[in-house]
Structures are given as C-alpha cells and as structure tokens.
Length: 109
Image 1: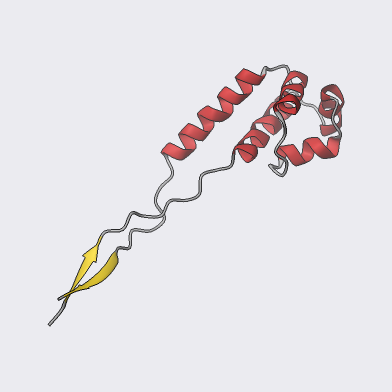
Image 2 (image 1 turned 120 degrees about the vertical axis):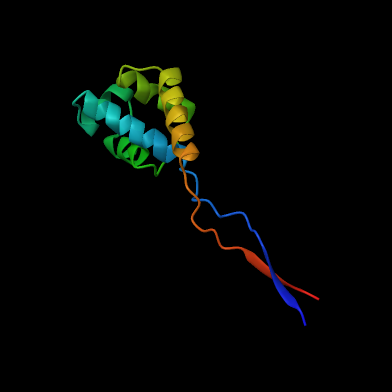
C-alpha cells in the first residue's frame, strides 16, 4: 500500500510593495509635513496637480527628472528621497510574513 508523504513547500510571500507606491507615500508625507496643497507643490515642481496626485497614489511611474523636480519642490534631494524609500522598502520586506504554511503531498510506493 502506498504511503502519503508531505513535502514542505516554501510558503508563498505577500507581494513586495511597489517602488512607485512607496515613493508616492513618501512624497505625500513630505508634502503634508510642509503643509502644502497638491497645487502648491505641483506649481513649485512644474507639474500638474493631477500628475502629482497620481504619483502620490502610486499610479504613475515618474522619470528620475520628475522625481528630482518634486523632491526639490519639497526641499529635499533625489538621493535623500530615494534612500528614504529604499530604507522603508528594506524594513517592509524584512518584516513581511508568509501567508501560508501548507505543504505539498506525493504518493510513495
């Protein structure tokens, strides 16, 4: 008679957060820290308020030039902003827990 053996399967992980979403969160926090409206920050950066809103919500993948312009409008640098986003990604990814621990099964003769 065959035995059923359990083979451990790596637990699926939650999807990593997207760079553009983490960037948008950082930009929104910075804008709120400066107590500015979308329109005020967008005008300083030379982008439309609608575009800045989409960037903040993680819907747009802005170019490095656009990120630098928005960062400058918020009185920070591209390197400070990207370092902050990278650090947040590191901490988020390091604490992500597996979703499931179920194993795979196979028949052995």
